[in-house]
Image: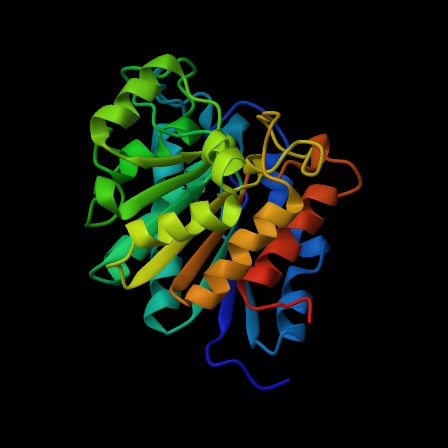
Amino acid sequence: MPQAAYPINIFGVPMDLGQNRRGVDMGPSAIRYAGLQQRLQSLGYQVQDSGNIPVPIIEQVRHLSQDDHMHNAGAIASVCQRTYEAVRKAQSDGQRAVVLGGDHSVALGSVAASLDAADRVGVLWIDAHGDFNTPDITPSGNVHGMVVTSLMGMCPPPLLIGERRLQADQIVMIATRDLDPAEKIAIRQAGVKVMSMSEIDENGMAEVLRASLRALGNVETIHVSFDMDSLDPSVAPGVGTPVSGGLTVREGHLIMEMLADDGRVRTLDLVEVNPILDERNRTAQVAVELAASLFGQRII
Ligand code: MG
Ligand code: MG
């Protein structure tokens, strides 16, 4: 196996403050236990695991002043600031970063790092959900549902990390199938491209991904933020907010294989694995397989 051109750096962010189910903080352990580092090494990469970004537990932050419209925002923002700095450093050292959540709020830090790392950056938000609420319209107050809006500068501090804001033409959502009513309106108004599950059913995954990559035709690098609830719960049951009618395992792999061929992906988030809700670590195993496909594993 030839030595791959760039090293990979893994960061765990055991964050569970962005939603209200316990267990997603164990996601990084579950994905490591499923053999992420060894799998990527077997593809010829030099792989470093930088350990976890420290995250306070809910019992430590619950007593802090709380905003009902964005729970634990201050604590989430400090973790995401540290995540931002760690991922930025890896990117400027020429490494590919793999960020293990934790709930999807970790992407406030990782995507912000990608946006500041290059001039023209695209984001693929692969998720059953839009994560496009704001403190004004959120039904739950959970920050993991406000990540894209925060990245676009539509949420208030402290949810704004990094220098640059994501523009609507820099992001494509894929596998979307569960949007809150006000969130739907906000996405349409912002003009974000949504490749929903119905689109995938109608046109097939390959065509949907080709169209998504065409929409990101002029970006230099791509950040993939992969929420494991994009997959169907029958194949990825270990997630906090499962929604039926999701991606098959093969559709997930096809996305990753096509992205490997595209060659522009620099940073990957694998988020929302909740081992407490999982069956024998299946969801973390699927996450590892998908990462391997993204980094070039081929059937033959
Ligand atoms: Mg999400
Ligand atoms: Mg989701």
